[in-house]
Image 1: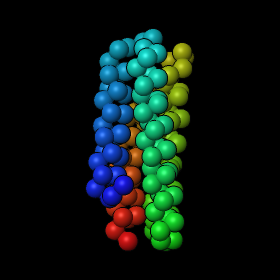
Image 2: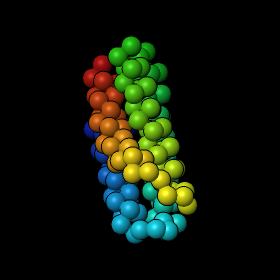
Image 3: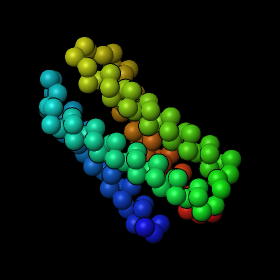
Length: 123
């Protein structure tokens, strides 16, 4: 898969994750199980796609320190997003800070992913 197609696929994954997340938040409580499942599965697919892309690129040319830092930052953003989403999907009401974190981290994950992909493919 060429660089442009990978970037488009990654962008489409993030678009669908964002749209399904917005749709899920607008359905209110209790959360719609079908929408929640789609949101989580698309997020998982995006993460797997990025891991496969990173692995394939690292086999072509070994990764440098900057690429590893970008990958770690992206991974931490993804983990934070998944954790905060997990807290929000529980039955217990969560503090407003958890919702705010879950609104900010996906944007940071998207920007970090874009930077990581740029670093990987510009080598």
